[in-house]
Each structure stands twice: as C-alpha cells, then as structure tokens.
Length: 515
Image (cartoon, rainbow, N blue to C red; front, side, top):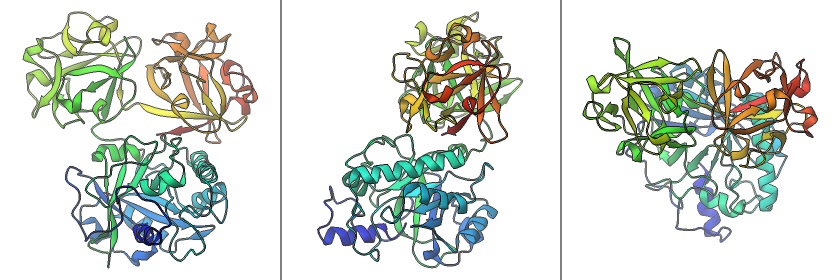
C-alpha cells in the first residue's frame, strides 16, 4: 500500500484527479505515532523485502496487515513468511489484497485472495482487507478510476466484499483514501458496515470517505522506520485499545468487556460525552462509550472501567447522585454486585448504599443506585460485548432484512448489508439468544407462537423472542425458535421468514457475518 500516495501525486500533477483540500498529496518525513493512540502497527508487502519480525516486535507494534495477493491471481511471495513471523512474535495479523478492478471481477479476485490468505478464527487473525485506491504508476493506460464508471466500481467492490463475507463469516475491511473514494465511487455510502482503514498523511484522518462516520485504522505515513525493516514502511494506528483490537480479531479480551442493554427501553448504557456526563441508557448501538471492562474487585464485587475515558464507574456521593465514570481507582463507591435474574437479565447492586441501579424514568434520565427492589427499570441484558451479525440465507444467497423500521416481517431479499440487515445478539438465558434489530431497536419475535412470520416489533424479551443458535457441519447456522421448537426457514427467499419447519434443511440454513 505504500505506493499509493506517490501514485496520487503523479495523477494530480498530470491533472487526472480533482483533489479537495490537498489531503495526502505529499508524504512527509518519517513521523512518530499521532498522539492519543496507544495501539500501533504497520502494513507490509514484498516491497519491504526480508523482515526480522522479532526486531519489529521490539518497536511496540501490536498488529500487521500483510499483502497476500494482488491484481488477478498474483500472490505475494513474501506473504507466508511475513504472516508466520508476525504471529510468532505476538502481533495480531491480517491479510490484504491489492485490487485491480480492470483485469477481472470482484468475486474472482476475492476467491483467489481467500484461497491464499490463511484466514482462521484463532482470536489472533484480523479480518481480511481490500486495498482499493489509485492504480500504480506502472499500470499504464488507466485513469484514476481504472477506466470504470462509479457504478461499475461500486459493483466490483460489492462483489468482492460479499464473497469475503461468505468465505470467512466476517466483513472485510476496506483500505482507501477519501480523495480516491469520493470521485471514483460518486460518493457511494453503501459500505458503512465494512470498517474503513483510511490512508491520510496529515495530522488527522479526517475527512473520511463518503459513508463512514468513524474509522478503525489510520495509515498516517508511508515513510516510517521500524527495527527489522530496511527502508520505508507504512505505519498505522488503531482507533481503540488493545481489548478492542482483540475483539476485532475475534478474540476474547481479558478481563472481559461489558455492554449493558436496559430492558425498559432496549437502549445501551453509555458513558455519555466520553465519560464527562453520567451514565445513561440512550444508545441503539455499541461504540467505545458503551463498553466497560469488568474488573474483579474482590469479595464477589466487580468494578466497571469505562472504555470512553479509562475511569471507573462510581455511585457518586454514596449513591445519592447518578453513576458516572470519573474515578482513577476502586473504592467502596466503585464496587457493584452482579445479580442474575430468572429472565436472563442482570441487575447491579451498589456497594455504596446496597441499592439497585435503575435506568431512571424508563431510561430517560441517568442511571442511579436508589432502588430497594428489582423491577423493569433495574434489569439489564448481558455482561459481555454484544455481537452484531447479519444472516445470509442459503436458499437464495440474500441477506435477511427487516424491510423497514416499521416492524414488517423479516425476509431474505437484500444483496448487501445496511442497518436494516443488522441484528445485535443478546443472551437471553438458558442457552437462548434474542435478536435486536438495528433498524428500530425492537426484538425479533416468532409471531403468534411461530404461526406467523418473524418480525422485529417487541420491546422486551419473552418466550416468542428467544431462539437457539444451532451450528451445522457446513459452517452455517440455523435458528430454533423457543416459541414452537421449530426451525426458522427462508422458504426459497420469496416469502417472509417463519418458524414452522421440524427439520433442518437448506432453506433453514444461514451464513453468519459478524462484526
């Protein structure tokens, strides 16, 4: 990826690309990591030659993206050695493919990439990544967009990332630059479910390409220097801490992360304004403010360390004031006991005053520990990072969608993933899960005890909203409804999903994509 900015400079000089703001036009001298990002890494290819990964590890790098292939059927000869070396020396490792959309289709290049990328769900392997940017200077006869129209490029990228999702069960990351993406895709915004690895050699990664409101990785220089590598190398930072990087790789962070979903309003608890404001249950999705590290505080108590600011949650003023993440150490006010409820939810009992934490006023006000008994407002779902997933039906290779935000029946008819095709998996106790639709913040139900189609229209988890995930030998999963003990079927994809099948066949199988 390190040749991208040099190629951009050449294109700009030739008048082949209109650029806004001068972003990324000149690669500065080797620079230190931008302040505020503790997790650093690099990306490499055959351009770096032989790499001493033991020496690289001494630099403090935590991850590496390594080129596995490029163009149409061209492997990187150094990939196997680099991949093994990075992992052997404790780095999280991921593979990337340098795309050339003018020579073959997106699916074909994705398949060759997946065949060579050695992806494995071992907790140390990062999702596969598509490198889509300006053509190299020696790829002659091409304009900045590979002589393709925006719609052709978008279709090519869609074919690539969809195939990677099917092959690995994970959404591919997309490496690109705002000044290439926006003109060449006509500001396409349909890939926001795929995390972005942005290249920008400026003090900030912003502005981001169209469609993304946040970034996962930032390549901030192509002229970095690292022990164990001769010459220049791309240097990167991760937008999160080491636990979040482990989560991206599918590993289990230790100590565990927690996200709390208030039962009363199906909203996630947030350390509001990066922890400067009290905790409140007002978020429909999980970001950094909605995650907490669960720390064993001894005596059956835990403390919650907010990822938003690295401070502990306290029951302020011995519980007289709302919970807020503002403590540097664990004291009496920062300890909570986790109480399990019969419906699979949990409640938090504050050590500060021996009262339960409540989502005050049905979640419209901040959390506070002032209740002597557990009711609806005092119940929260799961102490673990929620998993967001999409389901692709084996019956027709289409994604399951809620169709709208209005509770219409679920149906497998979408070619790509957007917000309507995303569901948060919530532990519901007893080996069951519930599916919370990102489209409207409602739970999926097997309507009428399974006699009617599945729909996302419930505010709370009851018997009809519980499903058991069944793993199949071919790597797919099936959903067994608690409502009637029958499998959910896509019925060829032409009809809404319904839980009415006693046996598990092709129509009852789904590829799962998590992110």
